[in-house]
Figure 1 (tube, one colour):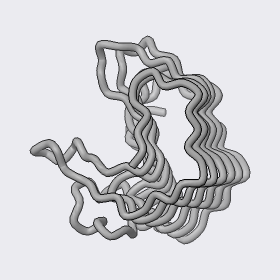
Figure 2 (tube, rainbow, N blue to C red):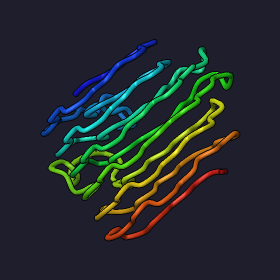
Figure 3 (cartoon, rainbow, N blue to C red):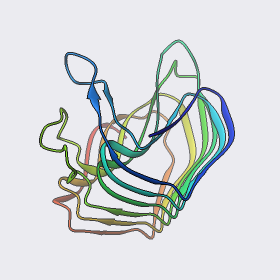
Length: 193
């Protein structure tokens, strides 16, 4: 896969075919996994992910995440648009567990086609089969604003279109003009929203 890790700026990932990504369970409980197609980690700005074909991915098709409560993240303009994402455990995953002082401004997931989340080659052998969703969210300790999920097609998830196991103190997500069909459930949310 492709990873942007630590203070990356002005990165474009375009017209890539990212398929058949394996994974690894790297903790005894299985809670730490590898195997994302496109991953962002820590602070970044002006990241554009567009017109990619992503298929048969062990974990997330596209993800931004962070886990370190000693630091604050600073994320500006994380954009994923016009991608085809198929057969991933999660089409799009987004979460942050920093020191609570971070800022995330401008997350855009627009005009993507997401098909058959949780129906990939490894779905029956991996840990954490509860998600199997198009959009997965976990902790959000940073202040999130200007987050848009718009004009997407979400088709055929094994479990959910939206899976959120979250505690988000400051949340601003706009869901608009998306098409959902063929999933067992539209949304499952745990925690406080």
